[in-house]
Image (cartoon, rainbow, N blue to C red; front, top):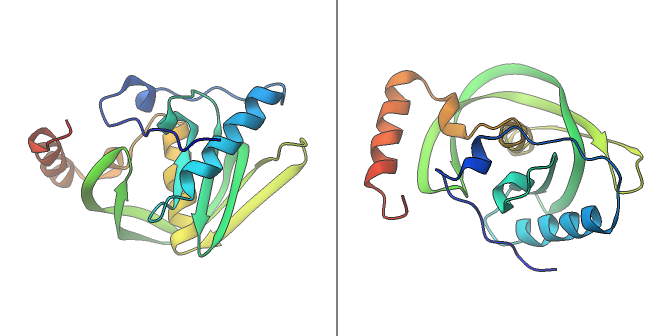
Length: 163
């Protein structure tokens, strides 16, 4: 399956809450193939379905050489210290801001067979899980910034060549 183009900040799909996946059919299997192919591009830690224009609750991840996906994920646990971590987003190209994230995250969902799938971790994986869950809930990481940082981020977005 192909690497799908990434939707850029300003696209309404990125601000829309993603719908749950019902029946797992060939269309959903194709979506997972596209998500996994799209996240394998070097430098990518995660791709949410919304980022490739599909308003369904699914994302792929690529952290520390482990590539996977999850359907209908729910963020079931976060813990540890909230730290401001440098974060970027494929949908907000070339901009990085310190974003508050918990040091541990756990999501629960299903795989293509409908079996329960749990993904949990700390560090970059925790950050990626929280980031991708935000996409499924209609948020981009800029929405998580403190007011002064968000103001600066929006200024940089407006001045970017891609906006």
